[in-house]
Every structure is written in C-alpha cells, then in structure tokens.
Length: 135
Image 1 (cartoon, rainbow, N blue to C red):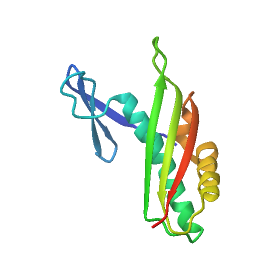
Image 2 (cartoon, rainbow, N blue to C red):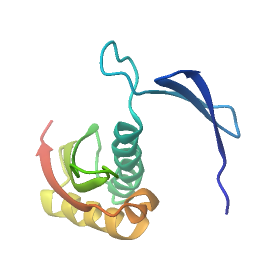
Image 3 (cartoon, helix red, strand yellow):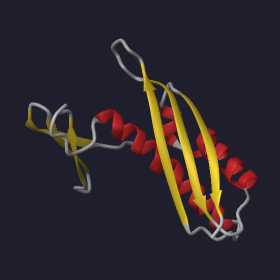
Image 4 (cartoon, rainbow, N blue to C red):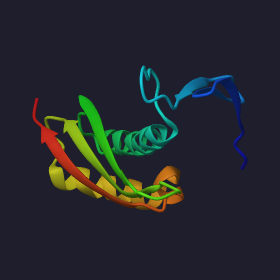
C-alpha cells in the first residue's frame, strides 16, 4: 500500500501539504508569529491520533462508556542534527464511568506495540501513562 502527499512552498517558513483526497495541513517553521504546527509537532499529533483511534474503538468494543479521551504528547529531541525524537511520553486521560485503569493500560500498550503504524515508524522510546476520570 502506498500513501502520497504533495507539499507546496508558501513562504520560506510555511508549506502546505495535501493528501490525494485534497485534505490539507499548513506546516509552520517560524519562531515568531507561529500559527500552525511544525513538522515535529505534527509527528506527535500523528502518533496521538493513531493510538487514539485504536484505544477509543477498543474501549467501546468492550462495552465500556467513553465520554472523553485526551492524549497529551511530549517529545524529547536530540541536540544534534538530525534532531529526531529520542523519547516520547503520551499521557492518556480517559473519562469513563466504567473503564478500569488496567484495561486502558492494556489497550494502550497493545495499540502502541501492535496496531499503530506511526509508533512502529519511529525510532523513539515511547512510554505512556493513563488516568481515568469517573463521570
């Protein structure tokens, strides 16, 4: 399976990237006046989104109520070029009246290690923690 995107120059520090369906994202490399995400922030967003889908669907398949799911992603990068992520931590905040922390941890681990293509594509050591909010 192939995936294709096209990235177009907008200015020295801004680019527009689109997939084959025309969905677009603006990439922003400015230090001052930054509006959009940088490529490395987009990597964290892609990782969070990839894992979120799997975790949310699996929680619901287990007949648990999912009211909200928030993932806070933090990445530590190398000091020297190439400045890739060496460590990434994902904090999963799940709002559910009936999901247990053990269940969410198990589902998250499975998603990261087996199903998330983004996680499998990264060199970084990826860790996670979970928090359940009862509502």
